[in-house]
Length: 493
Image 1 (tube, rainbow, N blue to C red):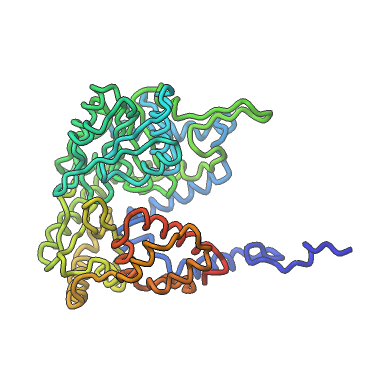
Image 2 (cartoon, one colour):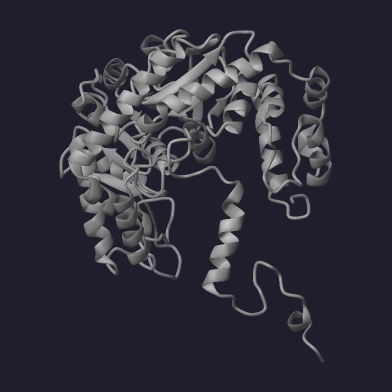
């Protein structure tokens, strides 16, 4: 009898015979043709480029050198302990701590935030209904942590003009069930630093831990302060701050998968850990959500920090600060475009007047070579376009401003954005949870989404207008179903 498995045709994910490295790299290059560029100065979200090839080379080689090292058991691979001590210690030293400050190296800001919330929750085992108090501008990772860990998220309004957290509103939201309060330094959406000292002081008076989400700005703000920027105190030096998260794969310019979570004391770090001995295998002790984990990101972060050094980071900080100041000033000359709030970091949110279609502006800018990240309106906060300006942005800031002006001129005759009222009404009535992927995908062309295109939709303005007109809960359902359809092989291109 013939084994049916041996006669089945090979799947492209696993060919019948092995292929050469050259072929594989050629395939990867073809697949990446539609990706946003990860180097240079034209992708203003998602990627962080130091612009220094020698630094990237050091990180790449260090990453590959540790590719097969498993961080699951540091007693088997003591190099992991040595590297983590250096990376965590260097991060703590710049953020109000020292070599004795306890910390954890994680895979990214979301994991750092999950662990911070877990530690705070586990510090109150007496509560069956713990709560987390955040400003409305806090990162979505806190909502994710609440959903994963069974912690109710209480969102509080922010200053509608400056977009900073309101300490009084946060204090009023705290109850005897609050296990953690949160401040951002800065918030991702608007690049402004919350009043950390006030929020932390009130939390301390109530005996509540305070976490500072410095994922995007933690490794940037100290260098901006060195460059003369007025950076308010936000780190572990602030009384009442009990934990802080800082991503090194952002303004630390390390390869993706690198974040540090710092704690004021060892007891809180221990609560972030997980241990299990009630099975017949090896005793599990995990400082992170992951168990087995490659040491490549840790080595890449270590090598990047070593290759750049203080002088390198200080120079990159000065360049990013100069680029931000030029963008803020240059936008003033573009009719219908404005900077929302007063950025404390090198993150800028661009708003438009009622007659300029923000989402069409993003499409026009992308067609001209610059990617700007659309951010939708929520809780009275206006939709905007996000720009993250890094150490290489100064080289292209005049090109960016020229593209913004050209794009604004191109879309101004279109008038104000007009979401499709009929589709909005339909989506508010349809139970999206009851649709299978094929049925959901059949609705997408009406919104301008073509899953059959390998390059993705060329114009996202119709999609963003539609989503912006829908309630956040409906947006979440649509985004979830879209992702599910996108990864369905029979529906994609």
